[in-house]
Structure formats: structure tokens, C-alpha cells
Length: 395
Image 1 (tube, rainbow, N blue to C red):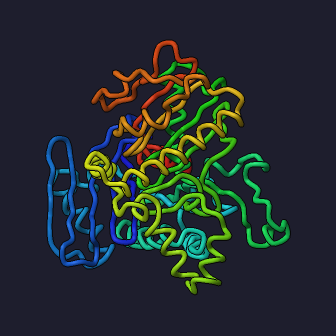
Image 2: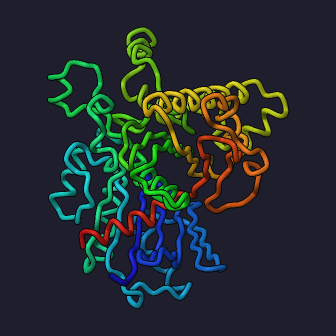
């Protein structure tokens, strides 16, 4: 099918958007509206080599989307003339039942609203963005694509928590996994890069951004992933804690007198790299480490320790690993993180080529030494393209 798909990713105070041709993979334009609801809102759109920017108050998500349409028109990308066939929406949590790309209707909106407690930071703004976009573009199908979909069929041993099984069944408590669109896309791209059938590869994918997750993928199917019921489990992230002893939460409630909302806010917004060092930008963290900042050094050490721990666990789970792939903002751009995550793993079959790892190249590339039994890659993720292509499967 020819035509274009508009992909929207709605945050609580932001709206990311991209217009793509799914068949060719070409991005016609992309942009973001930030600080929605503030006087200092900004909206940018990039089309080719041209960047357009607007500053000033953008009251709400509806005004944000209208601003994005204005920027498209200013760049000569009129949606009415570009064969728009669908609007794709990234939805973080689909719960137990929603795992295929799904055309949005009123009943789906109700279901997504009910799932808000599972992803309180992500699902409510996604629902808001969908509602706004349906009003603005009522004549094209809207499709929800779920971050949890790729991990829907995790093996039971991986998906199941060791808690009271009746309680877990009643409340649909299991490990759902997140960033699934990215993990699936990157694992497919890695197989294409290596010119090897995905069915014959055991892969570890490390999606390292402000949110971070790891997955073990055997033959194209995930067998484990680091995130769980919510996007808080697993690796150390920008503001999220990752793995923490649940006894800590009980202790904070019973002994420190913190309420549930306070604990949740702490785990989501004041933990991870930010909670340990007050900073989430790894470029700044590296600068602070070089200046002797002990808090920054400890935060970085904790981050790397957790990452190495998951790599080692997935090596053990799969028995052997053919390829380890880094992706997302930190994974694609931070050579030091990649180096330190894999340092001293040569006895386990993973060895970097330092020169290749330090290369400023930005495309898909190999960074492992020629003699490394396990190939190490950097593959740029493209969740928007994956979402756009998922839309075509259902419209």
C-alpha cells in the first residue's frame, strides 16, 4: 500500500510526531512540541535540511497538534496532499489482552483508560493524544500499537512472578515487558545487517535511553526482558530505579511514613541516574566524573554494574549468544557506556574493537573485534517506522 502514516507519541507535556512512507521507510518530516501548557512552549519540525521552530504558549495537546499541522504546511508537507492512510499511536501498556495493532474506537479508549494504573506516566497522555488526533483527523483510521506486544508470548518461566498465583491471576500480574517495538525492530535489523536468518540467531538487545531495557531473543522470539509489570523494573534508567528490593517500599511506607503516591513518584521521577547524581545526561555525567565528582562516579558504576549483570544473565539463559546490539540514545551514541558494559567479557566470547567502538559513525555498524565469537553491533532504532508499518497490517 502506498501513502503516508502520521505517527504520534504523546507524553504528559510533549507531543512527538513523524510523517513517514512505510513502504520506503522515508521520513518526510518529524518534530516535537515540548512544555505543553507552559508559557515557554516550543515546537519544532525538521523536513529535509530545513528546521522550523515556534516559541510561545501552547495551551494543550489539541493546540500542540494544530501547531504541528501548521508547521507541516509551512514546510510544504500538506497532509491533505500526501495520501495520509493512517495515524499510528504509540501506547505503552496494552495489558493482557491488547497486543496486536488495533484500530481505535470508543471501546478501545475505555480499555486503555482502564489500564492507566499499569502505566500511570504513559497511558493517560497516550489516550489524550489519541482523542485529540481523532477529533483533528476524523476521516483516517487511527491505530494503537503497543510497547508490550512483542513480549506477549514470553515463556511462562520468564513472565511469571513468584507471588500468590490466585492473586496474580485476579489482577493480571505478570511481566509484560516494554520497548517491544524497538526490540523487535532492532533484532530484525541486526539479522539483516548480518545477512543471517533471524531464526538462527540468539540475540541480546540493549535499548539504552532515558528509559532502558534489555531483551534476550532466540530465533526472533523473546525469551526474557528486563522490564516487568510496569516500565520500572530492570536496568537503571534516567529517573527510574530499575530493580529494587520490594521490602524497601514496605519499609518506606511503614517506617519512613511515605505514602503510596510519594513512593511511586520517587521510583519514577527521582531515582535512577537522577536520584543518585542529580543528572540524566550522560555527557554531563562523564564531565562530572572527569572533574572528580564522586556522586556521578557512583551513579555511573551502579548503571554499568546493573547492565553487565543483565548481559551475563542472558548469556546464561540462552547458552550462547550470536550478537549483542546497542540501540537508543545512550546505546547508539555513548562509546564509554558500550566499552564499560562489555569490559572483561572476552572469556565469555565478547570482545570490542576499541577503534570501531569510538568511531563517530551513526549508521548500523559492527564494533566487535574480528576474533570475537559474539558479534557486537550498534543499530539505530526506528520505532516510528515500525509503528507505521504495523498500521498497514490492519487498515
